[in-house]
Length: 114
Image 1 (cartoon, rainbow, N blue to C red):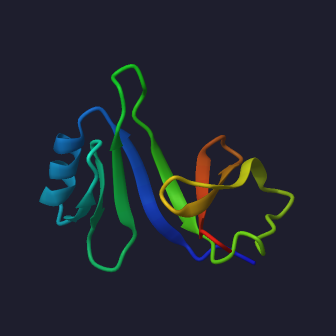
Image 2: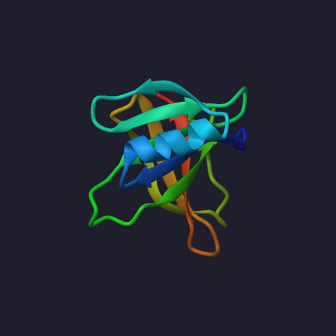
């Protein structure tokens, strides 16, 4: 089983409000905001952007999220370095972290319960 392409871009920031405003000026609309300085923005049918505020002592990061239809059926090729296997998240999905040949981390996200 293969991934189904890019589902989202996950960003961390030091200022949720400024980051959200930046994307809104680029045509994204706020889909929902949490009560802890994070939220999801959408622009049409493309991948969504999820932004989460982190403390100043943490470096802002970007992570691309690839969609997987069924975590239990997914078997990565041996060429893919699995950093963490599929685990339940607090936001209702299952997520695996993999590393590409250049050391970048990628998230593979599947629906919960699969």
